[in-house]
Amino acid sequence: MTRDEILKAPSMPAFSPSYPHGPYRFIRREYLIITYETDPEALRAALPEPLEPAPGNLAYYEWMKMPDSSGFGDYEESGSAIVASYKGEPCNYSVQMYLDDEPPITAGREIWGFPKKYGVPRLKVMKDTLTGTLHYDEERVAMGTMTYKHHSLEDQLDKVREGIGQLNVNLKLIPDVDGGVKVAQLVGYRLKDITVHGAWEGDARLHLIPHVNCRVADLPVRRIVRARHQIVDFTLPYGHVLHDYLA
Image (tube, rainbow, N blue to C red):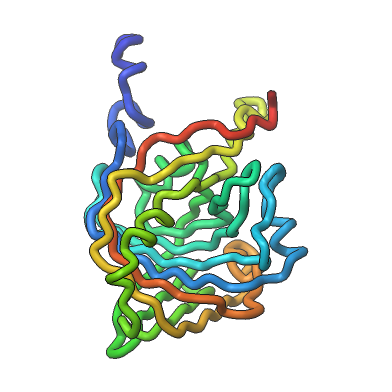
């Protein structure tokens, strides 16, 4: 393998890469997003500086079903995030994510710094209820339920699209070969080429169970604020560095 061949490899292992070069297109990605008020001290402890919490101490828990993802395949994902701001600009900060497919775990961590670990999330319609569950090491650690398509947002799809396209932020940490810190960055990215096939709101409930290695319950639920069910297409482009902790 020559130097040029090595530098053209999209990912490790070079002989059989985990994922191809991007950007990455997602078709009919389905979401259940439950936004809630949480404990302000727990929220601040999970939110890296210089990000600031948005008013109301808001976090959200989401399930995502990806049936058609270029380079990654068919998989599901679940995790928590914080509604925040970066230098006054609204953003969403990813706290933790759990999914059941190796390529997007590896690519997510290596490229954008997504906080991904292996878990078994599931999102499905159970009779009249949109239901999300997350199992970690065979234990259920999260369950979310929402009324199924009770309130359509058909007349607000432009607003939904704008929200999907706002700034998202991850904390990217990569160790050096000596165990020190090689990369410590806040990474920003924006989804693009967004098509909203449908969006709905309704009543919801969220149950998070404490687990030492899957700490979704560390941002406790104080009050459900809103719930959203949506189906969208978009492209995930590469990101950019917002803040370098080693600079």
